[in-house]
Image (cartoon, rainbow, N blue to C red; front, side):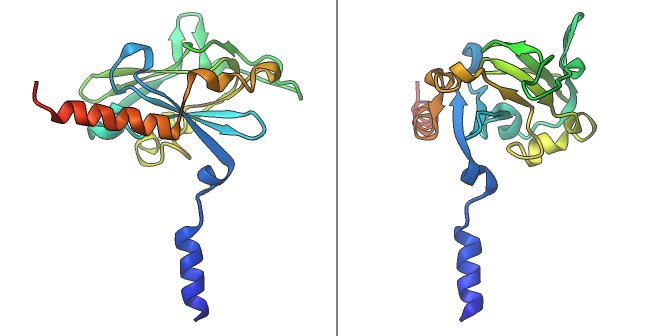
Length: 182
């Protein structure tokens, strides 16, 4: 009897992501169809930038050739250094600041954007060594970056983002539009 109760608990228990983070989405980033990003917002304001499950990298069975945090000649996200309680020294990002470029083995290149304004706390260097983390565990070990919004903006950053329900509506509209003949 006790083992049945334990199994029920394991099946119904929410994941750490579902339990402690609120999922927000940015669909069709910069007008590029299906290039969706997911922002996991913790109650302490910290936001984790990941690929949405509908992003072409995760949908089309792509293999990742390289991930590059070098945005331009003078700007590398890998050079980001933060220190102290107020996270001084972190690069300040706007909504559409590029975080990295992902190149697939078929030479398709995707630029991943910050989606929110804030201070860059860290980039995930583990995906440079093991790019498959991005494919296998995009919401956990395969995250792109961690951003801390300004305190006064922490409530308003979600105004331009979609809730999970709104995002699911966008995805279902896409699939119904795609299944109808032109």
